[in-house]
Image 1 (tube, protein in one colour):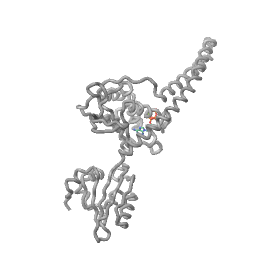
Image 2 (cartoon, protein in one colour):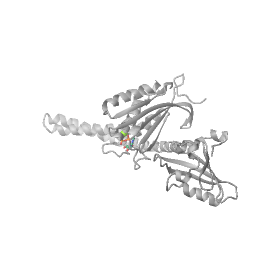
Image 3 (cartoon, helix red, strand yellow):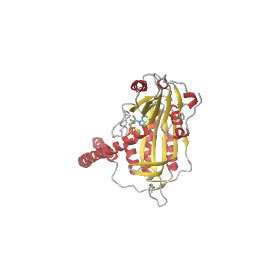
Image 4 (cartoon, helix red, strand yellow):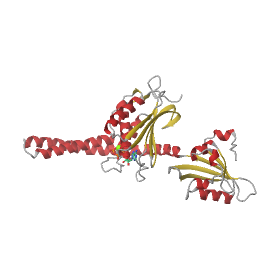
Length: 359
Ligand SMILES: Nc1ncnc2c1ncn2[C@@H]1O[C@H](COP(=O)(O)OP(=O)(O)OP(=O)(O)O)[C@@H](O)[C@H]1O
Ligand SMILES: [Mg+2]
């Protein structure tokens, strides 16, 4: 059957499909093609339930809507797409056709809400992180004071001990006290306000890539897909470099020395970040084809001390998020086996050297 979706359906960002009484797809608009990654002509005639794989919650929902013969909505359904194992979250509305046919056909509307959920999660985490940070700063103060005393006492002792081999022990005390003090500084993220200047994001990406390229082995490659027309962002060079390093190091560690990292830049229009609407922002994607973020840490990776590495401190991403927030930006991620992508959204610099917001 030919696909004859009216123009208005073509323009919708909501996926709309019509099903006959046997669940077979009769029509599908372009948004449905995008979700199911198949052209409308390939989707036609396939059973929607089967298309989404066995044991997916859509089976039950389709049945319930048909039995009730009423409009039926379901929110935050998680579907594992069988063709690439990715998990998407959808809101779904099913409207049975008003015909005497038994079972009736259905109109299915699907909105993929992963991005909205990630943005909501980001705002929620931002609030939580602020209170965690207050707690950490309080703790940091309590830890650093006695550390200073400890270090001072070790230095005095070292002078008393002259050249004896006991000096080795005082050095260990000083060294470990310094290490702890640095760790506390990293956790608090520093107090100094950053100085911002217009920056070319590609120059920063290239700097980080070149440094890392020297470290990694030959079977790890970087693919660059930069939009050369990107405007400058307003940023603090050193801290943005640190943020990029943290994400890229994680990707390299996840790949275990073998794989591919994509660096992609794009312009993104009309995005609201922390209640400020930006006409355009720069998006940087850092995507690796590693095993994906492990389910044990998946929802908490930006929180301090969350790590699944034997020698990890679990601070890399906490610091990264902090830096990006200081730039009035946003960082989000999606991950499934074979593909993990971190996206940074950074406001661009206006002609007056300020962050450009919508007027
Ligand atoms: N690209 C990735 N692929 C798979 N897992 C990742 C990726 N990036 C981050 N993670 C997960 O997120 C966790 C937190 O990362 P984060 O950078 O904050 O800490 P870390 O790398 O463990 O330690 P460090 O503080 O030394 O960076 C990691 O331990 C890892 O489990
Ligand atoms: Mg890390």
